[in-house]
Amino acid sequence: MKTKATITSLASLRDRLREFSQERDWDQYHTPKNLSMALIGEAAELVEHFQWVEGSQSHLLEEKTRHSVEEELADILIYLVRISDKLDVDLYQAVERKLEINERKYPAEKVRGSAKKYTEYVD
Amino acid sequence: MKTKATITSLASLRDRLREFSQERDWDQYHTPKNLSMALIGEAAELVEHFQWVEGSQSHLLEEKTRHSVEEELADILIYLVRISDKLDVDLYQAVERKLEINERKYPAEKVRGSAKKYTEYVD
Amino acid sequence: MKTKATITSLASLRDRLREFSQERDWDQYHTPKNLSMALIGEAAELVEHFQWVEGSQSHLLEEKTRHSVEEELADILIYLVRISDKLDVDLYQAVERKLEINERKYPAEKVRGSAKKYTEYVD
Amino acid sequence: MKTKATITSLASLRDRLREFSQERDWDQYHTPKNLSMALIGEAAELVEHFQWVEGSQSHLLEEKTRHSVEEELADILIYLVRISDKLDVDLYQAVERKLEINERKYPAEKVRGSAKKYTEYVD
Image 1 (cartoon, rainbow over the protein chains, first blue to last red):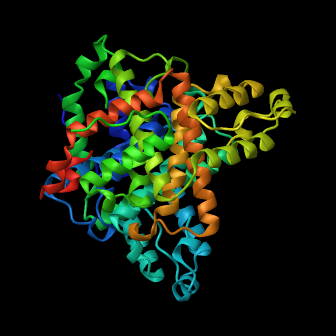
Image 2: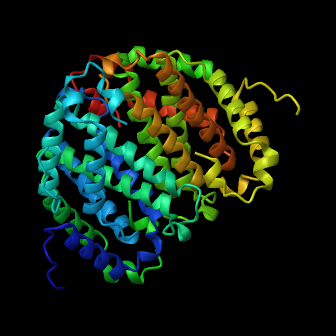
């Protein structure tokens, strides 16, 4: 069994996931529809860790919980990169565009000084 | 208004999001609890695009849908990087560990040749 | 230990849940925010059962899976009734209003005969 | 257009939804898989209303938000009843069984007096 390449970028993660899936003949299950369901499942496992704690305490994780949270975060990234690969989406380009939209939509000088609630600004 | 740095890595995205949030005084809202809720909201918007289409057709997106899907994927990455920053989690390390677990849990030679259903292997 | 009343209506379920929570001093955790997180967690467990199967096969459940699916459906109803109680929402009134909206929004004669895709009608 | 029956029970809601779907020829889209995706989409819209507010304030809804929240709760119940119908699940029986499990799992006298955290008791 050869040594796998270390993950240092979204591109290397994408390649590793392609290889993982091909070796197991799992591409047939990895439709964007199914992957979106798997992704939200992992997001829900993340949410579960925080559902009964106060927001202000939610960064304080016991060792065991932290370990689980890291796994959920990893799973989300895995499915996110996998679905982006299947749809041929460049995540950084998509993020760049979205940040530009957000920067126009919520101008810092206006949002900061405003009495309007945060909830009215952000969807 | 200064030019923002282009996003080319998770680290540069993390920094850009820190800056974005600080400029708006939004860190107070960005508890892991709240961010996990925002993340699952974006995951659900992704799911919605695929809920009435066949899995086998779900990679075929009309132009307008593709644009929206790219935005949801970007939003998921944004919240994922943001919550990881707040919890001081190194996403690539977490992914590396998770992939090693998966590779042991689903050995290619066993999974590929097995008559057991995929659903019994994967959670 | 006294015998609990059988659930035959949303009102009797609401009362049973109130009692359950009060006996355990759990009302303090049951904010609408927390309950909405718990509800989506159960919805995600439901989704997980269907994520790798074909839609056309998704009504065919093995005994063990059927048992789990019934538990998730029960949990969703439990949290739905609980959050509605906390927000003083009459679910049947809310449903009645929503159905009237849907009936106006998707007129049967127009939707049925139309070549427009289902996905364009339904959010 | 005939007058629709008022919703006063899960059974009457189930029948109204059957009729609604048949009139539009939508049963073909209503696989358990697709309905589970639609349900979690509505759950996420519910979550969104609460994501940036404090838990302790989350029962205080402005008129417009309350209206939306009621719609999401209605939509969740609609999809829950619809998927239960498709899978031939009796929701009240399922809930009854789940409550009995919970009552055994979290005995009031033990849970109430315990110093153990709520989070260790509840999944």
